[in-house]
Image 1: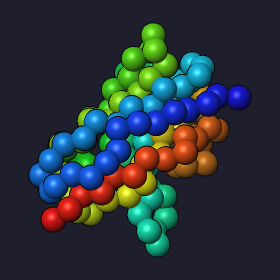
Image 2: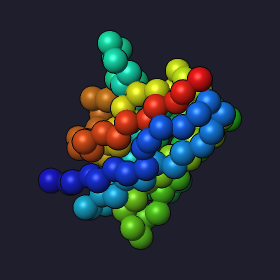
Image 3: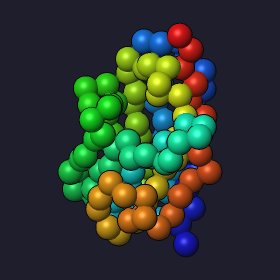
Length: 118
């Protein structure tokens, strides 16, 4: 069982920046961020492998950067140029498989709210 603790969410104005962090209690091959807005399905944001391979959703390319610190079992999501449509609960997920589908990830954090005002 891997436990995840997320931090860094909050309220920011459009165009602003936030950095999310997720600390895991154990090592995982893949670490990812998903988000879910009210009334919408959970959607992929970004993922990173143990060796640094990354994938990003088209909607966040050029604005969000995922990174990880393997020594700390921690994954980060640097978000810049935030837009009101980025408002959602952001979830960290980890697992042994790689991909953009939520079903590929075995462990999930509790979520952190990101709200972008216009």
